[in-house]
Amino acid sequence: MIHAKAAIANGGGDFSIQTIEVDDVPVWDEVLIQVKAAGICHTDWDSQSWGKPLIMGHEGAGIIVRVGPEVKNLQVGDKVILNWAIPCYQCFQCQEGNQHICEVNSPVTAGNKVSGGHARLEASTFNAIPVERSFSLGTMSEYTLVREAACVKINVDIPFASAAIISCGVMTGYGSVVNAAKVKPGSSVVVLGTGGVGLNVIQGARIAGAAKIIAIDINPSRLEMAVEYGATHTILASKDDIGLIEAAKKVKELTHRGADYAFECTAIPALGAAPLAMVRNAGMAVQVSGIEQEINIDMNLFEWDKVYINPLYGKARPQIDFPVLQELYKKGDLILDKMVTQTYSLYELNIAFSDMHQGLNAKGVIVF
Image 1 (tube, one colour):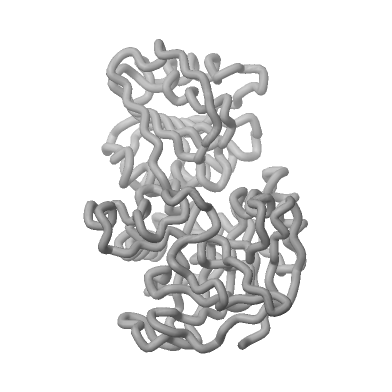
Image 2: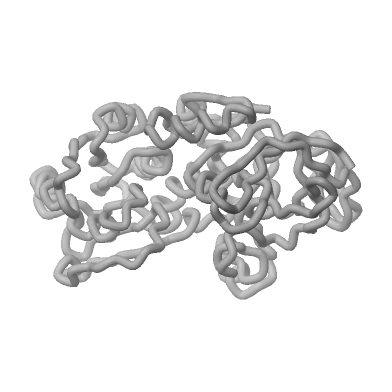
């Protein structure tokens, strides 16, 4: 066993920094990772209240320090990005190319946001009691033991903090544009909410060749940031604008008939239908932020021939998409270093969460 500092959620809405024991003898296709950086997002905050103790964190990057006997494509010393939607490559959905909704390993499609990937529960213990890792990763720990399928090799010169954020927010935003909506060059795009995911939708749309990218937010400083990532127009919305109907009127003034695509990135249930009001007839609305609550939708918003999709994780195929994102970063097309606006130690996680809720960062990252 190797001792490691880790953030452990208590299941009831709080966490603490503790020393855990991680099995340092990988079996089967396991790899032992020394975590170098872990991204911070709202899912990590939510994980404090999932009803059971768990090692927090599902975005990360690090170095392989040991490999199991069945590991085929990785070796000690490799730098890797950790991917939380771990594919089996054999089930129906994986064979269909939908690795992000693997029927065997995905904790989301299995209805359990904690487990998945068939991680050995006993591989991590706290006070000699096994403790689960968030999404079978638990990246808010100095060391973690994961499946080989959870790792994508880093092939470019990139800081660990920048690499870590690829594995959730960047992939979700970029992939929603490129893989899910398949945004066409020359098209018009609206982005509702310019947090970490929204900024990646914006730069995904820029990379895809969208001609008009309209960012909508209630925070002026976030809109200024949106311009840096590729927004061509901004709309400062009002909290009193129910369903963003007034903002939608401004979108139609800019696009004449409505946008070709609109992406909801606010995670506010009341705005779940808002992108439908932004798009033209036969346009596409995309629900990116993962709203899971029951909402009411005026079916008139669907008139006529509008399409509404709810993709998970940007339809990620990690071994295909992560290398592409690395190359886009290398070319200078994908902004990552600037997106990491603040780094923290593990002991500053409460401060990081506070900054996140105040919207101070594009992305905060724990650096070990």
